[in-house]
Image (cartoon, rainbow, N blue to C red; front, side):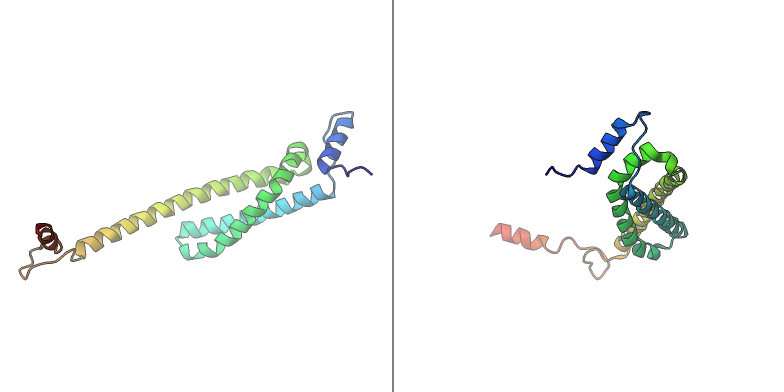
Length: 164
C-alpha cells in the first residue's frame, strides 16, 4: 500500500494535466481557509478602525483591551497566509471582495502605525518634561541654613579614608 499523496502534490498534478494551464480547482479545505482568512481580515479591519479612533481621540485607556484581540487576529492571519497566498495568486477572480479588503486593511495598518508613533513621541515628551520639572523642583542634594548648596556629603569621608 502506497503513502497518501499530499494536497500539494494533488493540486500540482491537476494543474499539470489541465489543457488550458489554468490553476487547479479549490477543494473544501481551500474554501474553508479562505473563509477563515476573510473573517480574520474583517475582524482586524473593524478592530483597527476602533483602535485608530481611540488613538485620534487620545483615549489611551481603550487600547489595552484591544491589544490581546489584535495579537490573536494577527496570529490567525499568519497561520492562514501560507495556504491563502497561492490561492489568491491563482484564484483572485473567485474572491473579488479581497481586492478591496486587503488594500483597505493595509491603509488601516499604516495609519495605525503612524498614530502609535505619534502617541509614543507625545508620551516621551511628557515624560521628559515631568523629569525636568522634578529635577528643577527637587532639593537635589544638601543645603546649608542659608540655602547655599553643599558639596557631595560622601566626598569628605572618601578623602578621609584615602588619608588613612
